Image 1 (cartoon, rainbow, N blue to C red):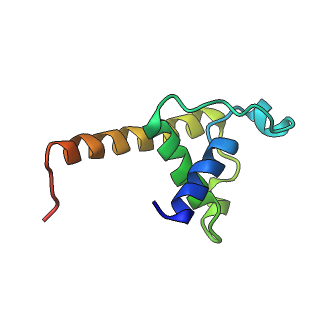
Image 2: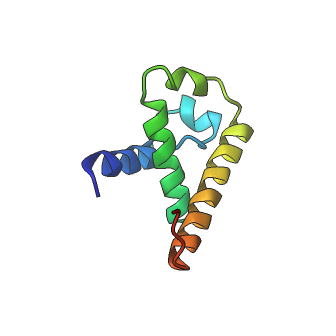
Length: 92
């Protein structure tokens, strides 16, 4: 695993994109835990995206409910890809 991937996972856990607005304006302690590995991956992906110049501004000001939907959608895609990989799928 690359250092960048590890960093994104760690920062996604520390600053979860789908945390409530109250958590974000609070002291930043006790972030809500991921429900599973795919949820953690989705948060890591979003951390990576929101840390990129030119992209991060597009994620500013998104309502909590929409942030939750985005994380759930990405987590479901990650789960589906893992299931396909387990079944021997290859994109050729």
